Image (cartoon, rainbow, N blue to C red; front, side, top):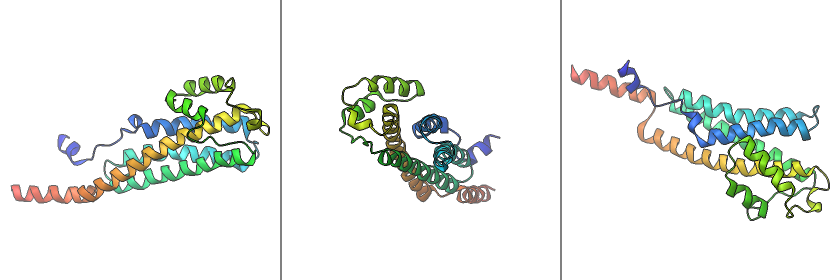
Length: 199
């Protein structure tokens, strides 16, 4: 059994990954967001939920699959990254189509959001409640959609920025590891070779 553990790559620690945690938070927020602000009969509802879910599920699946396939982990992590990019576009579309602003990084509310290090649904809700009273949100920002939806969409976009940044770093590391150490097949081959040499 110990021999098998040494053969398999470390795997399955996805719950500790900040990229997974943020993707999961974005999924939870998105489920609620579409319930409140997207028409139920719109294809966008299903697309946003599926994109958010795909981001979460593919990080997890890739992490577990990495025990025997670094190539699969790399592929699924890239699918997760692409799914979150799709979700980001949906939130940007929502703001643009309702003539509501997307916060620049130097927007006062974006700065406050970043400093709060939002990491849970409770943190996110508390920020929305606080931001609704903040005087940086002008009436011009929200004339075509609910104020809360503008804050929520911008908040998710900031979370997605961080999640995508972390996944880009993760992908670069996985690619470098694969280049340097090969995959499971190469590892098995080296072990067989060593056993033959030891006989």
